[in-house]
Picture (cartoon, rainbow, N blue to C red):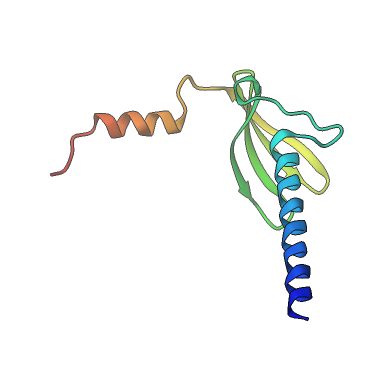
Length: 106
């Protein structure tokens, strides 16, 4: 009885592990039919920031071809709120340069 239970438990663990490995491989390598993976260096669209307005609406800052777009996303669809030329340095780059250039407070 105990041997049969251990055999069934081993088979269950093996099957669950196999399902986990297959799921990971499908996500990692984009093996779903109709899915298309783009390498990071070839991406044209970048989501810079996102803010939830309510449970079903959000505002996004999207960069595409050196322009920043403020986009509203709601159940009724997407709306372009504003667009500007992208700055040469991002806020993240500016904060890093300020940290490197600032004297330490020892």
